[in-house]
Each structure stands twice: as C-alpha cells, then as structure tokens.
Length: 317
Ligand code: HEM
Ligand SMILES: *[C@@H]1O[C@H](CO)[C@@H](O)[C@H](O)[C@H]1NC(C)=O
Ligand SMILES: *[C@@H]1O[C@H](CO)[C@@H](O)[C@H](O)[C@H]1NC(C)=O
Ligand SMILES: *[C@@H]1O[C@H](CO)[C@@H](O)[C@H](O)[C@H]1NC(C)=O
Ligand SMILES: *[C@@H]1O[C@H](CO)[C@@H](O)[C@H](O)[C@H]1NC(C)=O
Ligand SMILES: *[C@@H]1O[C@H](CO)[C@@H](O)[C@H](O)[C@H]1NC(C)=O
Ligand SMILES: *[C@@H]1O[C@H](CO)[C@@H](O)[C@H](O)[C@H]1NC(C)=O
Image (tube, rainbow, N blue to C red; front, side, top):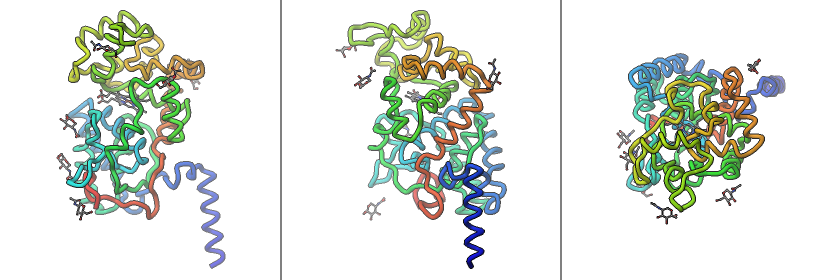
C-alpha cells in the first residue's frame, strides 16, 4: 500500500518534471490505451476534409480559439441551442464560425471505433493542429454548459486597442507574448468587411480613414468593401498568402497592412512591436506558435472525472 502511494507520488513528480503539470492534466497520447487509432483517424479525416476545402484550416483554428476563450477548451462552442438555451454558437453576432459539421463527422467515426472515449474538445484541438501542424496535449473532457451571453464578454473584438487585448488575454492567463504569437493565426483566413470598414470610411466619426493604415492598401480595401453596411464580402487577412501558414502576417503588419484595428494595435506597444519583428523569423514563429497554442489549449480544461465525453458534439449527453 505504502509503496504504491510512493510510486504514484514518484510518477506525479516525474510527470511534472517533464512538463505535464503545466497544461493541467493534459498529456501527450492520452488515448494511447483507450483508443489507439484516435489521433490517426482525426488526422486522416481532417486532411480529407481539408483537401476538399482549403479554407477549412482557418475555420478549425478559429473554432478552437473561440472554444478556449469561453469556458475553457471544453467544446462548449460546438453545442447546439435548445428550446431552453441559446448556446455560444448562436451569440449575436454568431461571429461567422464554421467547421462544426467536420468535427461532427470525425466524432461519428470515433464513436464507431471506440464509443464514449474521445472528447469533442480533444477532437477540436487535434483537428486544428492537423490543419496547421503543431503539437497538442490531450485529455480534455467536454463541458455541459454553453451560453450565448458569455461570448461577447470573452472573445476579443476586432476594434480592441492594445490595452484591451492585453487585458483580455491576461484574463485567460496568457501574456503579451502569447497575444502577439497567437495573432499570427491571422496568417490564414478571411475577415468580413463590416469588421474593419470603419477604418476606411468613418474612423473617428468624421468620415475619415485610420491614419495608421497604409493609404495604398486602404484604397485597395475600399474597392472590395464599398460601404460601411457591407456585411457579406470577405477579404484575405494576409493578402496573397491567406491559405499558407507562414510569417507573412507579421510582414504585412509591419507594413501597416494589418486588417483589423486589433492587428494594427500590436504595433502601438513597444514590447509587442519588438515581438512582431522577431516573429518575421519563420523558425522562431513556428516554435513560439506551438508553445502558445499549448498554453491556449490548456485554458480552464476539464480533466479526470469532471465534465463528460459527449456522444455527439452538438448535444450534451
Ligand atoms: C487577438 C485577438 C483576436 C481578435 C480581435 C480576432 C478577431 C478576428 C476577426 C474579427 C476575424 C474575422 C471573422 C470574420 O469576419 O468572419 C478573425 C478571423 C480569424 N481568426 Fe482571429 N482574432 C483574434 C485572435 C485570434 C487567435 C488567437 C487565433 C488562433 C490562434 C485566431 C484565428 C483566426 C482565424 C484562423 C481567422 C480566419 C477565420 C476564417 O477564415 O473564417 N484569431 N479573427
Ligand atoms: C428544458 O428545461 C426543463 C426544466 O429544466 C427540462 O425538463 C426539459 O427537459 C428541458 N428541455 C430541453 C429541450 O432541454
Ligand atoms: C450564423 O448567423 C447566420 C446569419 O444569421 C446564419 O445564416 C448562420 O446559420 C448562423 N450560423 C450558426 C452556426 O449558427
Ligand atoms: C483603449 O480603449 C479603452 C476602452 O475604450 C479606453 O478606455 C482606453 O483609454 C484605450 N486605451 C488607449 C491606450 O487608447
Ligand atoms: C460616422 O460616425 C458618426 C459618429 O459615430 C455617425 O454619427 C455617422 O452616422 C457615421 N457615418 C456613417 C456614414 O455611418
Ligand atoms: C531565426 O531564429 C532561429 C531560432 O531562434 C535562429 O537560430 C536563426 O538564426 C534566426 N534567423 C535569422 C535570419 O535571424
Ligand atoms: C446541430 O444543429 C445543426 C444546425 O441546425 C444541425 O445540422 C446538426 O445536426 C445539429 N447537431 C446535432 C448533434 O444535433
């Protein structure tokens, strides 16, 4: 008995030494014994979907981000509304998230392989990883609560200034360094006109343009987004390379061509601005992105016996 406890203690210390403690109880290959093919299945299915839809990586990456920033990475973002409850995905505005069907498709295959084992929260994290390639710890369990009312208070807005961004990330235990690194997620994907057209047409309420935005780029954006009321047109956040996960986001940012005020805001703080410069180095960006994703992926996770493993990602059990 005593020696068993000692072994347990040794194991715990051992795990902590190799850094497992950091992400709560998340670890590598959580499903090794319970569903050994889980990660392979997720990877194969994700790649199948991505090959049919090259925009999918941006959708999955953003979905994981939104999941983690509201109630932690517990797949609460995937839950459908019910007669009784307006869930996160129906927050107004619902923030144009997508990719839910892909997660549900992967989940169905995993339920057939090993029922009740692999959480939706881990599927989301792993499929986001397989979309853009970074390492992910596993062992998250799924939450049972999803409230539309919690979205706007937790997800940073595209018009946030540096102070607000810093505070928002700090509320999630993330640093300014994480903020600058994770904003690099905007190297893939698109943004809707109405989320930045104030910078083009009415920045301070006097029909003016954001002086921090490159004028040539602003003129180009005006040809795409022709009025403040355009809510349907999208433009690439990283023009010309919006399907490539690369460091071009930081290059355009330094050229004053960040799409959102929240992107441009990263240049307004000296420390953050320095980090932007450093991250134009691809080796550095990839290493740092993986590390910051690990921290983001560990926000308020449910592990052990807390929460559940959903049967379908869209409904609680
Ligand atoms: C720093 C604060 C952030 C703000 C203010 C922000 C804001 C936004 C906005 C407004 C959009 C455009 C949505 C649309 O028009 O459909 C967007 C797209 C996106 N964001 Fe962020 N974001 C932030 C951080 C992040 C982080 C941390 C990640 C992931 C690591 C991320 C990944 C993405 C991706 C991949 C897209 C493209 C989605 C698509 O193409 O459908 N963002 N973000
Ligand atoms: C709504 O809430 C009531 C009472 O809490 C519960 O009995 C019912 O099953 C719920 N209905 C749905 C669709 O969740
Ligand atoms: C988000 O809102 C739009 C417009 O109201 C709607 O067409 C779309 O289905 C909604 N998406 C989700 C996932 O609820
Ligand atoms: C950032 O925005 C907040 C809220 O609008 C405002 O109180 C604050 O003064 C702004 N900070 C800077 C540095 O502009
Ligand atoms: C520009 O902003 C001001 C102040 O918010 C507002 O009164 C005005 O209606 C806006 N102009 C347009 C064209 O929306
Ligand atoms: C990029 O960063 C890596 C790792 O930090 C470093 O070894 C390399 O020298 C840097 N390259 C340049 C061009 O600065
Ligand atoms: C969630 O809602 C979507 C859209 O209404 C629907 O297509 C999907 O089947 C639902 N998911 C589940 C698990 O019920």
